[in-house]
Amino acid sequence: MSRVAAVGLACLMLTCFLAGCIETGGSGGTSSSNDIQSPDWEIGDWWLYTFSTPDYSDDTARLVVASDSEEGGTAYMLAISSVGEARRHAVLNHNPFLGRITHDNLSTFENGIPQPVLNFPLSRGASWEFGLFSIDWTADIISISGGVAIISADSSDGSTLDYVYDSNARFFKSFIWTDSSGVVQLRMMLADEGASHSGDVYFVRGGDLYSNIWDSGTDFEFQDSFFVSDHPNDGEWDEMIYFLDASCGGGSSSITLTLRDHGSISALERVWGPGASESGTLGTIPYPSEEYTLTATFTGENYLRLIFAGGITQSWSL
Image (tube, rainbow, N blue to C red; front, side, top):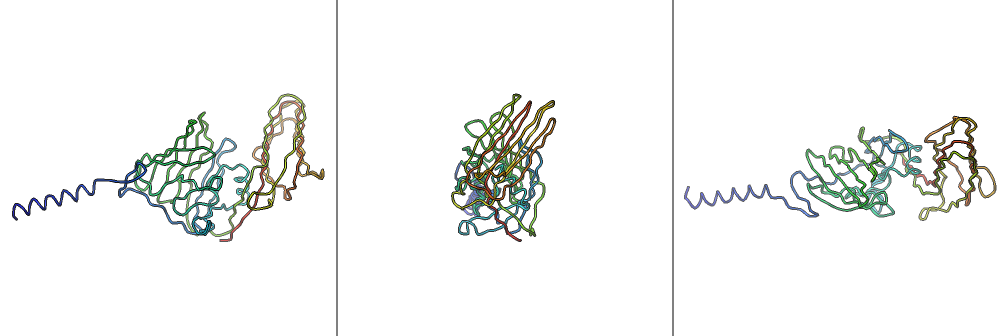
């Protein structure tokens, strides 16, 4: 081989070597063979998660792809396999990944706007912004290895999101929201996943109507009213969903709760005596009317938490 040919071959080999090592990309990230591309979901794909919040621990829910033609064919519908759990998620509003999820980025919708909690392709060092839980976040990909991306997001108030995307599962392996005081507001952990779910699945579109907490050691009566209007886009609610926690102290402690509609017809009545308690009770009022009056009477040491939400139920048979 001539000297000129040898030099040319050496330059070619060096060029190929450098081409394999140099990484380029936007948004502060890089592009390499480790990048993770957006997955394709099929109707019937499912993920089983455990959810923990300050309200309860280890609530299990199976999320299922019910449709792939939402938003003019650009989004999936992620539903849930239990109508009771769908109602729970609607009134507590703790799972942001139920409902519409975009095809391109698996973005969830908040206030009608898709939020890129993930930003595909996932590249080591990439950074981007999004909104979730009514908080603005800046996300950074900490590492990518073996098809798993570890992501951390921060907010200006000191809250954090720490989440892991697993390309084999094609969704989150874990998702943890910690507030500025260090309290975990949501812990979402993948337990299992699969395809071809069979059966009915549900999505309950919720809307906040009323919430309050009473924690007192004095005797008193509370009365308030609230107006139930239609969903801003989808018309009348199918039902009103309530969630409550209650506990009474000893002695003569008691709680009496009454909810009446505008015709003074009782829609909800509950009484708790000394030492009685219940936690995480979920129920429905089938025919919401325009106005409700809530009366609660407390004697002694008591705690009561109430949440009411409107619900519109969609279902699919897979």
